[in-house]
Image 1 (cartoon, one colour):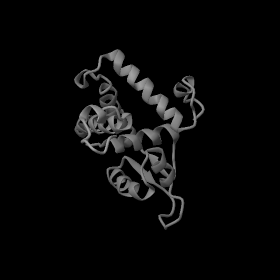
Image 2: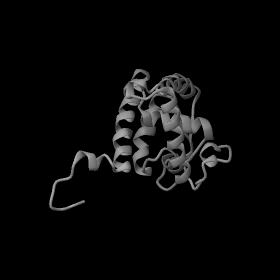
Image 3: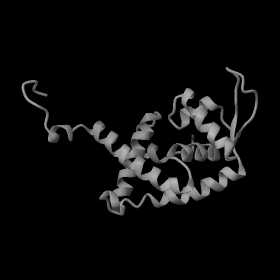
Image 4: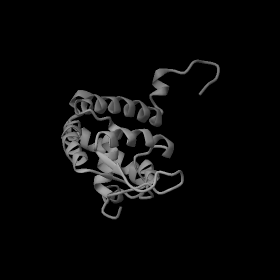
Length: 162
């Protein structure tokens, strides 16, 4: 960037990572509005889905799985536990393992939320055709795969070894 002139929007639009941030905020808000009908937030959806997939996890492992700081997950879990959607077992003493698991009510909430989340794959309101939306998802999964140490195109689709 030339420091003698102001940055242009065209130049800013060339920064892929900034565009990812903007799109993440837009699509995150879009999903949040849709999940609000289920009285859930996208993070709640992620927590319930992760627990359904993996079974019980420690709070720290769950926080890492849904990309939250371990200190930030406790209030999320408190709210979901009050609603009966998950339960924590074990001692709640600081430094102790505190397994978290989804309840039957949580699975019911996840089922309803899943239908909403799956319907949000229709990206026409975001300017994408069904084919473009699927292509965007493949590219995003490729980045997710790379973030997990899987760098080949095929590895982005191979989640069976998780």
